[in-house]
Amino acid sequence: MNKEEKKQELAARAAWMYYVAGLTQQEIAQSLGLSRQVAQRLVSAAREQGMVSVKIAHPVTHCLALAQALSAKFGLTLCRVVPSGQLDDDAVQQMLAVEGAEVMSQFISEDTPQTFGIGSGKTLRAIIDALPWTERPQHHCVSMIGAIARDDSGTRYDVPLKMAEKMQGKYFFIPAPLYADSPDDREMWCRHQVYQRVTQRALNASVIFLGIGEVSPGCPLNAEGFITDQQVSDLQSKGAAGEMLGHFFNQQGERIYSELDALLTSVPLEANTTRNIIGFAGGERKYAAIRAAVAGRWVNGLVTDEATANRLLSL
Figure 1 (cartoon, rainbow, N blue to C red):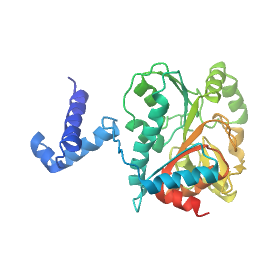
Figure 2: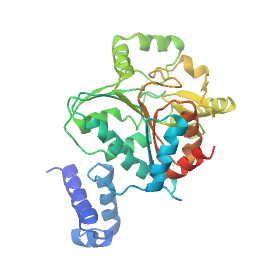
Figure 3: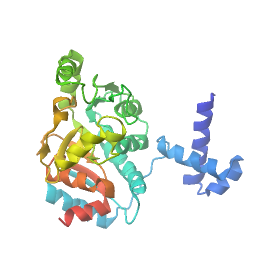
Figure 4: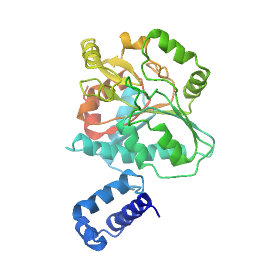
């Protein structure tokens, strides 16, 4: 057993003690001969690596009512709302990860071969980390977005490969940067036969799982090097409230165009979508983007939190 396998074995042991036996982190530390801080990290690692599957059988009635109301108001075919109360954004994301994994698992459990279109981002990565390992080699995952930044590095949140590994299925990725260096460069990338075959798979996906991004300094596209500080400022001046796959929209959900559109290589999206697109997002920071996405009907499914749902329904 190598070092990494030993670490995973220890994390699994700590998870059993914490979630099944009900031991405290201090008791786990004493049992394993570790410090409390190390025991805490092991329990967290077990959850993040998908070793722990949380299922709460009793629904929160208020959240069910909110989901039904959101579906009626915004024409959603699928809606889930997690309890949030006064939790901060990081805690909300953990809740979304568990519920998002439950939603994805319902599609993954299908015996009929499915093609899943996958976006990118921290929320989707957390959800896929929470997915249980399963054997569904008949399913395919296809990326909806190029994952190469301007400095030629890859994003930390390129998640379709991880999902394919969890299902033991195939993974198809877009061989292009999210934004090309020039319109001519974009044309070159998009003419490539591999690019065209992969994007066609994505357009025909059975269901699409996407994050909903905010537009502000330090937002994921900015922090990961896809767009510059000046481009963020320009987008904000045009009224950009949110984005999906590099497609920007304002508070009313109307598409906003900029210099970036001549460079964008991601799979096309459109408002008032008829495709099966489920968005995953929650927390105060994402509220404006979520509101814009549902207002423009960029998604027909939504997994979000209680506080966000209440604000959306108060509009």
